Image: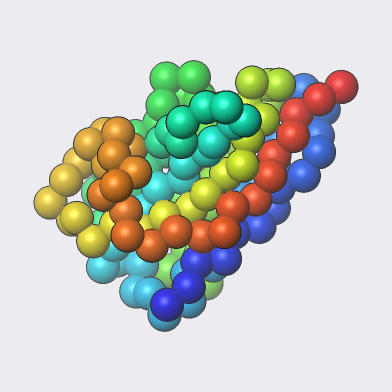
Length: 128
């Protein structure tokens, strides 16, 4: 099983990006999914999480209304749509899979340790 994240890059403030996470060897509906980010000198934080079969989603306060997590079962891919990007969104973004299906999206995003499988990270830099 493998998670492959992509889609990061250097963009200007106000721009949009879509991150993709191809989940090889996974059945998306059997897992909950999350996007986390880690900026230099900071701890890894949960950005957006979705429970199995899209039952519930959570977005961290600073990204509400700007970021959206979604899944495409046909492509076995989890996405993070990011709009109105700000310099403080600059970080390495990671996708992750959790088998803790009994937990809500809010709980999952609070606990990186709840996720066993991680992608390699993709760098997003927002700068003018």
